[in-house]
Image 1 (spheres, rainbow, N blue to C red):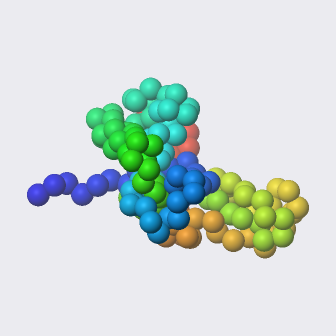
Image 2 (image 1 turned 90 degrees about the vertical axis):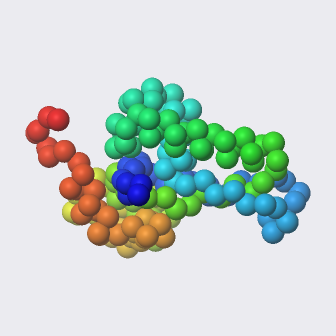
Image 3 (image 1 turned 90 degrees about the horizontal axis):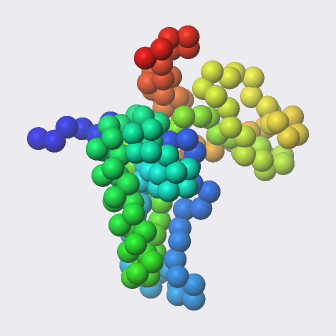
Amino acid sequence: MARPKRCRLVNLPPKHVAFKPTGIPANMLKKEIMTIDEYEAIRLADFEQLEHLESAKYMGVSRPTFSRVLDSARFKIAKMLTQGVLLEIEGGKIHFKNRLYRCNRCQSIIRFSLEEENIKCAECGSEDLTDYLEKYGHGECCRKNMRDMLPAKGKKK
């Protein structure tokens, strides 16, 4: 029996969650799902241009696991480009590194560390905020798990 997957750490959710060829309705296309951890692997390796070992540590996985996740993501992107499939980004066994909120007054996206308690919009000062990560199924339970996964302040690994 295979080991259960560990949660992968992700900085932020993707800004855009679907990509398709222009001029073709989405309902006429085959769909390919890229998980959020695959998206994060692409972001770290190809956009941020980090080494695989550094990226793996950032995501809380081994280097071989990171390489497998990255290979899977690259294959899905290649499939989208060569076969014109609809690529959607969703799911995966993940935890976010920060708390993310949308201000209901000015619509800004605000990032807070897990330790911060007084949460206000940095742009307009409003406290009327919506938890942006709830749509990904992440709430207080994930913030607690994330705190448990992070090294204690002042202690080195």
